[in-house]
Length: 271
Image (cartoon, rainbow, N blue to C red; front, side, top):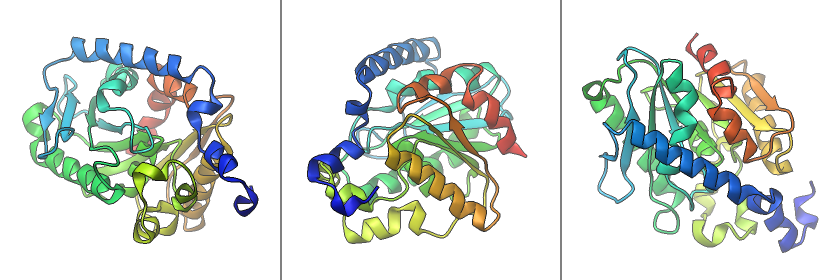
């Protein structure tokens, strides 16, 4: 893709996941409904506050074994849409196989900059490190997330609590976003593009698996491949997992399936 030759409309379309998947809203609605049911069935540790802002809360789903691994999952939405509540169903597969699960919320743009959002995720992980045991979570922690959450997974992989990561359909180079309508709320600065783009940063020496759907928009596919290539060049651990035929929304349904990506690949990140 020759970014410099594209019109503004073409640049917007290059990252428009909602427009690229005609029935995307139906997928979102179904996931939100399933998530509401999952939260209702496991309601003992919801909306636990880690910071002062409205969305600075955790939903925790501790396993019966406190020493079980814990999957932390950061929701997507280009840092400006959605909430943790709408993604609880993604935890159904890992929870069914005996893992603990945890979903942090964060403030959305434009009420927070991307710098602020990254800081909130790190603050949330600080809270979990200090308070997880009190809620029955003391096993190794795997950080994961989808879309914007995939970006935050790669960005926050170095947090001391995190053993390994699984980044799903992430955006790892922020520069092009400044030329799209996504930036109306993000308002990315030159410094943020330089310091918050995982492809521009030193690679973290922890396992990081990277997955994406082969039917996703080209920039997201390219970012996943490029980040894996950067890591592979320095022999860092972690697989690249293309999922045939999945788009940006059907890959989320693949995640929550008890036979899906998370349950197949999560155990490999504990090695």
